[in-house]
Image 1 (cartoon, one colour):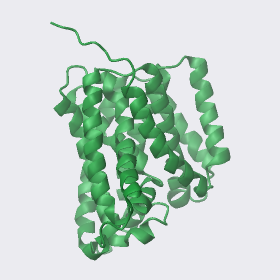
Image 2 (spheres, one colour):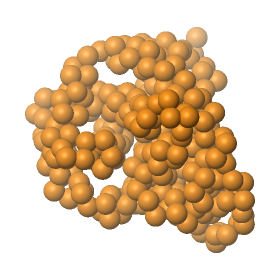
Image 3 (cartoon, helix red, strand yellow):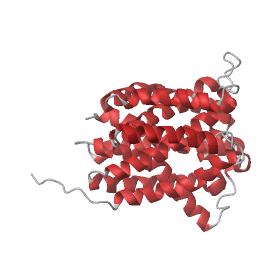
Length: 320
């Protein structure tokens, strides 16, 4: 069983993985200048639902498998798109994806404790990079870009809340069965910390670029890093700071692939991985409009998975 620090670090990474690669721009396009309000309310809704899952005790293998597959698809799409667009522009998406999958397959055959230790080691590095980026970006903030508020209709406002709650909470459910004797305060820390950092990034995106521009670009979360300048002492600093997102992707994906491996036999596991690689390469890589489409409906799918998992059979707690 994983300890408290390991649970918090894994929860932090899982809270953030779905936002990368279209998640931010879609939420901005939906909520516009209400983004910070809807995200905060979405975090509160997610925290409440997390408490219900904590009280539930555990969730079924079927729910775990669906959540792991759905979120691994989204993370793989985001990874290959980000890497092929900004980091390895001359490399094929298939090569990038296979290299990514080989790394994940190595992790799939390790114990959960090993993955938890990786998360525990990487967490302080990732958090330090977040703090460093925050300090560098604070001077670029233009608060006028936050106004006017309430420039969406009620349906869009609710949609923003649901989208944030689903995107931030669902990956966390992969950890519920490992909570052991941890209190709700313990398992909620990683979720809140991850959610606050996501909202902080949204604040910088809105105040630096404004919602109109940020909703049109692929990776506003990466582009704000390109605005950072350390007086020319370090060039291409965004490629260093992007390690913050790479840590989310790697650690979060490790948890997803491990959940798939532990809840299927070797034949189904192989079939799922092969189907995932072929399907993503054929239908999504280099087709950004398809990525945005699946990201849009994935928010609703994720929220549906929440209730599917929550309404399953409740575990009866033992009386001492």
